[in-house]
Length: 269
Ligand code: NAI
Ligand code: 15L
Image (cartoon, rainbow, N blue to C red):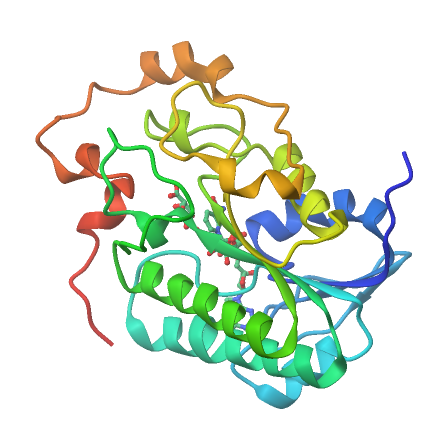
């Protein structure tokens, strides 16, 4: 299969769980993959460049963006926690990234948003990308900021972005909630490939999920991206049920889509 559409791609957050899962998979999408993180993760292999940078450092971010054709932005704080690091990585960091994209004429970004932008919808509701954000914490608010900022850079500067509201992307679903939210690594790569290759992306919001029977998200607003999941959490259902206790249906963790994130805290710097 020949997919390459870009000469040089930037992958931020390369040292993280999804960065590691995508590193080999993204080789088919470009000639050169530039990998970045603030954490050292070893040397570049053939067809790669490694450039370390803290997303909060504007000059460093300018350096990693210079010369790439498109960006897959995974870097940042990936869970609920104190506000100061979220502010630096997910708010200042995403601003630095879009300023660098504008400066260097990068026209397409895949932004790792999160289901926690809408975590306070209920598990018995099906939502689309047109539903208003209902973040379930400071982390979710920071991802909503990234979605809004990317919309601004599309409206003003024509930089196209896919905001991928990733559900739960791990090797396997880890609990009963993830039977609805799971996104396999292969489907994540399929989704990113679709975002990088669809002719007209515009500014789009798409839920990052596999073909799970139970779902809270309707991707009908994102048909133009052309994403077709091929995996499903359902093959793990029996094992997950055997290994986990039935949820307390009065607990907010089982009521709201964000699960445990809706109770994480207290908030603080
Ligand atoms: P992760 O926490 O394993 O990786 C994030 C990476 O970002 C880390 O390697 C970290 O060093 C780097 N990073 C953090 N702050 C930074 C900074 N200031 N400057 C430069 N790099 C920094 O997270 P994971 O699971 O790989 O997720 C990747 C992205 O996808 C994150 O943005 C996360 O919010 C998003 N996401 C992931 C989901 C999942 O199920 N894995 C679900 C929803 C969203
Ligand atoms: C996220 O946004 C996190 O980055 C990831 O670690 C998971 O917790 C995921 O959401 C989830 O909701 O399962």
